Length: 233
Ligand code: SF4
Image (spheres, rainbow, N blue to C red):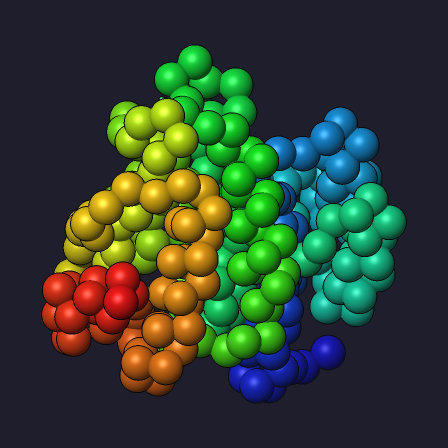
């Protein structure tokens, strides 16, 4: 079936990305906090064998992609993944699934990053899914200053600085130039305080970002100190 560019774009927004052959699609499966149970992994394996070519890949941000899917099968793929509680998505002009380190088991972690990432996922990814942002927004969570999850490189980074207290960084960006490193806002915060600040940050981006503008570019344009003051007011 021939799809036009609007249909392909709409599918991308739902988590189905056109493969380079221009015919097949990859299905992005959202993996909260980068953790899959054996049952969930089994379902992904089964779907990739039934509809794809018997394999799947991991994304940089700990989600899964099942490639080589036929357009006609995409709804069925989503339905079968949902049987195991798995959602398709993680694309589009919205907050992307939260990326975190292994601070649920790592001996250096100041807090349980899996638990916190899942809280962020529920409140911001699921809770603000339809909000509509100027561009994608990425949040990375790290359990300690070693920063395996590269919180500084995300639009918004949250990482453990000492027991019970996290630092927040704003304005990191990888990808096309310029590549920017996020800067830390003043103060340290409890997880609950950090979540409130992140919510404020998301709304600030929605209200002040220009269409298509990445969060880091907005911070550059407005000025880090101005954004910081507005968020801490
Ligand atoms: S960032 Fe720190 S807590 Fe997280 S995995 Fe790395 S060393 Fe462990």
